[in-house]
Length: 297
Image (cartoon, helix red, strand yellow):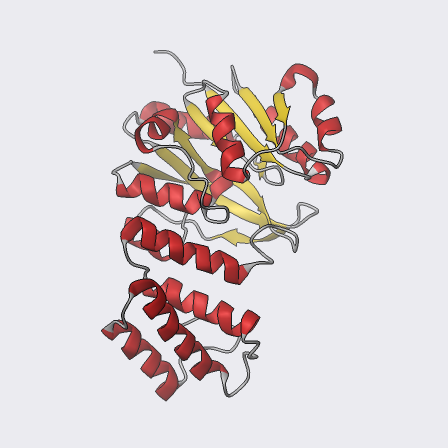
């Protein structure tokens, strides 16, 4: 039986300080017939010089694009490997990741997506915390992204069947992709092994724009399922109260403000106030179930 081949795709834009570590983590995997392409969005920092330094060990293109999902889609289209490994230009693989993933795919031809555990790491590769991955369940996935994107791998056939990344989602591009695949019946397999380091630092795209991210999550959920799960409404409400309304967590106004924001969010995205939302927010107001500094209980 022919061995499966891997196509690794890295979207990049002005990540010259990290991309060398990303590339090294891919090229050191030691799997045969690895295709590796970096799709750079026309970086103005040292990225292109770093890419050039690898010679023919990888291929790259540096030109303006329509954002990260467009870059990933171009990379997928430019490769032919059956297993697609998508690694952003500030993340890294752990040693042995690609072979471990290939082993699962080869032993389980029905599996479409393999994902594993990951660490959040800082700018200096120092461990911050575990990413909370868990065995696959669509209901759980709707409430929280239980897949860490750099630790997830998929067969090319899922792109042929379900389509590539949707360009409208710039923050939730991977989350929407996993949900779309799962909704369509793709088979996911959790591998309880550390596969990647996902870099987390103040300049990451999502860390400085929580309200925008949560708004897009809700838009995406409504588009995908016709309704936004309550937990995402509450998370949006917390971000709104903190970032836009500027109510401090310890303030006496914080809990009623989050309740009000939750009602507004429910009306905005779900067009109603469900009995669950009313009961939950009433419990916050009467029993103080919102923890200072945290999200909804």
